[in-house]
Image 1 (cartoon, one colour):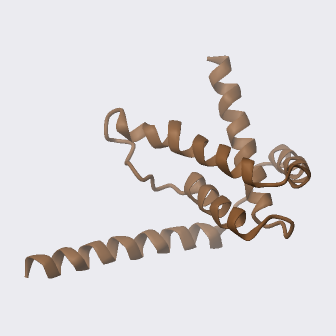
Image 2 (spheres, rainbow, N blue to C red):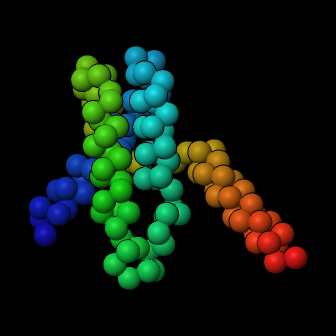
Image 3 (cartoon, rainbow, N blue to C red):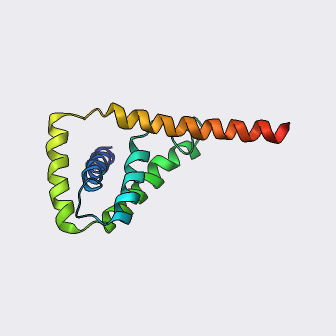
Length: 126
């Protein structure tokens, strides 16, 4: 159980490292775009596969997020990662940040996707 907790803490630190990396000007645009998607998905309260679905609900948390983090870390230059990791460690010592604008944006995107699905379903059945 201790190994699992250590793995989760490391993953959390890596996600915050990516958060700082996608805001760094030294990171290529394609890496920023992918990293922003990974960070937004990791911090989003809405999952691709809802957690209430047995077994499958946790696959995105166990497979998709770590795979995205791993790939994003490979895209970012090592010197940038070192700087961003230091910022992430300092931030985690202070406590989690609260970015209500980013949270609202994620919820708005999900609401637009949901509205589009409903719109398409209504048009299909009428």
